[in-house]
Picture 1 (cartoon, rainbow, N blue to C red):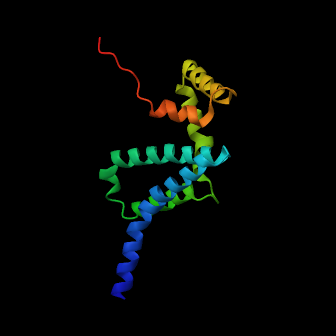
Picture 2 (picture 1 turned 180 degrees about the horizontal axis):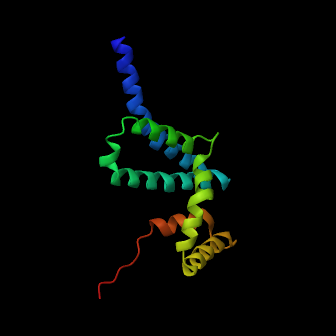
Length: 144
């Protein structure tokens, strides 16, 4: 019975990083490479919500230490956010986060993002090769 209990504890401690980081990392890479915009939105929403959850957890750590089932509740919540059957991250983002972000985003920022998206759609932008060259090419810095 002792070996089984040790195995369960080890699996329990590994489940957190796998569910919260490893699988979302893999799914985010797959989403970037796919043509669908829907999965991109799901994983961007996940990383936004997961970041907020982690920051909140850091602030409330002294209180959460006294709640014995906090780790399990967090694990189940993140599993709900991550699993494609539920798409919890997209649901939370659409339902709650988007409204609050729209309050604080300025018109100038919106126009900048919209301009960036339009320039990516233009046929003479050079595609992925141009983006890669811009990313890799160092910028000239002057020290005057």
